[in-house]
Length: 352
Image 1 (tube, one colour):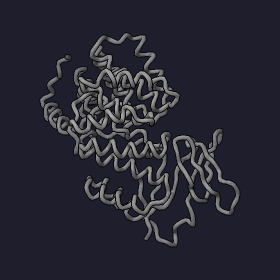
Image 2: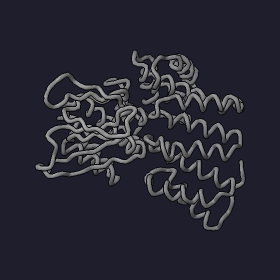
Image 3: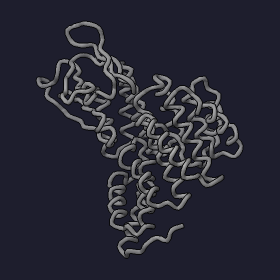
């Protein structure tokens, strides 16, 4: 049997990957793309060879000849395309939480995969794996390969950006400083993110983010803008008017990059002691914009803690249970288990 992976935008948004193993006799002769054209309620299937798939459009060479057809990514409902056995094995290992075998399988798949858009998927999977392992340097290296392949790829949600400043190893600091002067704006963004928590490099990182904020690139510019918002948390109390403006800005960003910005909005709401609004912002990350799994887990925990401060323990318990189920490997899941134990005594949390 040959493995076939079905991927739909709504499945990606929920963090699902559906794999189907089909008998050779039942396999389509070529790739199959299901679309819903703008203004239509019906679905249409295009059969051919997917030549590229970016955040903006899917390009397919239609069976039977003729010029390649470009379909806006927003119209794509599902894609059925062949993945190599190593690629498929990597996905299965990842689903089972077997990260080292997944990394090995994805790396073998890269050695033989010639389709550039599928190679970008493999880079994204490796970013996820290394992030879960806590190997930030490796995750960033793979993400750099991803953006160098296509700055407007579909996988910006996995970007290994640091949304809360934290110390990084000296070797990674040196690498991040080199990235800060890269000709690639996305690489500079990653470098600036890593250096925001470093005293000696923070000024340079903030200066670079201010430049990137004015970038014409909607991904780089939006993320740089949100990273700059995070620097306000330690300096002053953000006004309600400013927060409303930020929320409008987030809604204008591409959906794939909204996770980090919503997390910063949640943290800002906490800073203002607005527990209900903070929980709502964190839940947007946990339930919708959760390609960055560690950030999603952290957001789920923050949402539950905010709800506990409001004495909404039943809602908090539901979120904590889902967090433990979805991200059992993560540090936030460890704290979530402790919170579930505490909830058995129904002890409310005193607001900070």
